Amino acid sequence: MSESMSTLILLGSFLVMVFLRFPIAYSVGISTVLCLLSMGQNLSVLPMQMVRGVWSFSLMAVPFFITMGVLMGTGGISDKLIALANSLVGWMRGGLAMVNIVASYFFGGISGSASADTASLGSILIPMMVDQGYDADFSTAVTITSSCEGLLVPPSHNMVIYATTAGGISVGALFMAGYLPGALLAISLMIGSYIISVKRNYPKGEKFSIKNFIAQLGRSIWALAAVLIVVVGVVGGVFTATESAAISVLYSLFVSVFIYKGLNWKGVWENLEACIDTLAIVLILISLSGAFGYCLTNLHVPAKAAALITGVSSSPVVIALLLNLILLVLGCIMDMAPIILIATPILLPVATSIGISPIQFGIMVVLNCGIGLLTPPVGAVLFIGSAVAKLPMEKVVKATLPFYVCMLITLLLLTFVPQISLWLPSLFGYSV
Image (cartoon, rainbow, N blue to C red; front, top):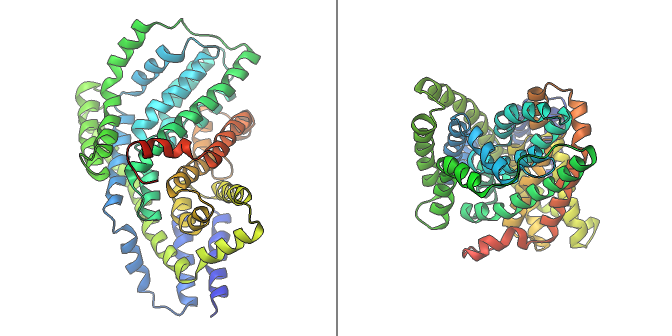
């Protein structure tokens, strides 16, 4: 069968199953099997490529980072981070909205998960904001959009997946690249929140007190130290990302059980069971995506996609906008990990051909996917936020519209101002 027909079978069957709401792992696996059959290849290729897909030392960091996030997220640190954020920005108009955004930045640096951020911080802050006079839909919109900061701020396991998929990308460089974009997203959301808060006359918090801030910082230092273990250790060359992740799991276990005492040993085992469920899904996706990528490579899909996109226009600006548009559309119909695993091999060569660094493109991919988590029909974080707030999804989407604008502005700045992503990695000696 011709390459064109096999490509149509691979991508066509995959998209049909996605739109029919098949589980994404089934969509990837079945479309890969159909493609291999159309290419006349032995199906023994499938398990071989699945094993090769997870045969990576860097990927060992993913289970550890997920476990670390779950332990710290349920170990009593949410209250500490909220109090720290309140002491820092709670004095502003719409102070609790600002607290929500800053707390997400702190919490994201520990959990690396937008879903965990929304579920844990949202369950505390949304009722608190409503009690103080904020609209429930606004409170939910702030919570779900700010949770995407955690995807950019290390340790983000999605960045590890991108680094492995892209090949030859330093995890440490990606970690350093995420700090300024995460801060930029937070500032953008804070500006949007402030404008809405002034318009609706939302309340202010107590006046800023340096004494209170230092006291709250002291109470939160155990949680924030987990980030230092990862970032300082990796950037300083003390240990690899995988080793830092393993150490962070032990540290988070110690802090959650013995320092903050938010977990007992029964709770630890329950959390480990939840981690296994999550890891099973992630690793099955990664392994199947390895086989899917094998088909893409053999059918020369990346080269054809590059030719198709560059054939639309020779302008780097137009091509960069097209790349973002493709990722945003994929985000509306797929979850984050599958997009990274499937789209990176296709779109990265196009990005590098117009001068976008693989590190910068990684930040673009992560933020695009983060926006996808907030958009129907498969926005996981959108669903979680609606469930936590007990609001219809349509009402939450409407309240989120101004924040979509803030996030898109941030995305455009990251696309066309590369130094926002590349300055810190280059400062620490990484090749960008």
